[in-house]
Length: 214
Image 1 (cartoon, rainbow, N blue to C red):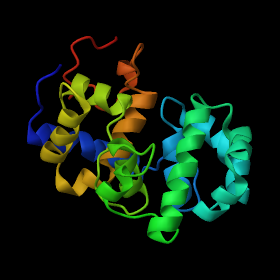
Image 2: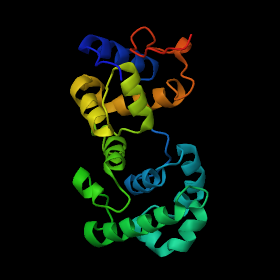
Image 3: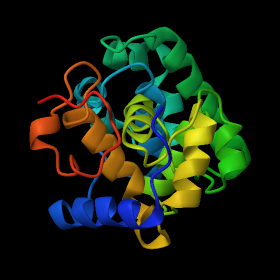
Image 4: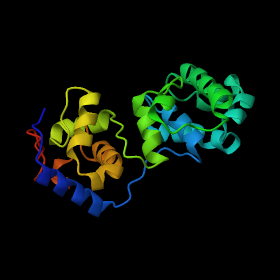
């Protein structure tokens, strides 16, 4: 684990991220808050590309919790069976859809606690939805962000909760909104687990990673 970087270094890192990509976007396809919840719930232990392939036709016919209930679990499975743990995920999607219809009038709630009360929706999923749909500066820490935060020194922590707190505490407020996407995209495409692309890294000179590749 790298040591925590100072304010000025972190500010420079995110200044560079912003200059390279001012408006970073999440890569999960969705058409509204509900389909975003479904997509993020399906993405656990799966790739965004794999989820998008599975939901492409699904979201053409299902965009509300009521439509999902009318579709039914077995027909949902036919759409998502290429995704890992699809049976359990289908069960959770049907349960959360029923709760949204019965308790929230078919609308997706915009509080973290309410979102986390839904089956299959943990803190990370709730934070993704809050960030991507309501533009709240919530920080969803996945494996890419956890790796990047610890390697670089931007947000070191022993677990995802510690990394989330480090992001909120140490990244300047003007970068908080997009911090999650800048870090996940950098971790996914540059600061890779096995072969990090250090020679072409935008922040090579600022990063604390001791095992930088040449």
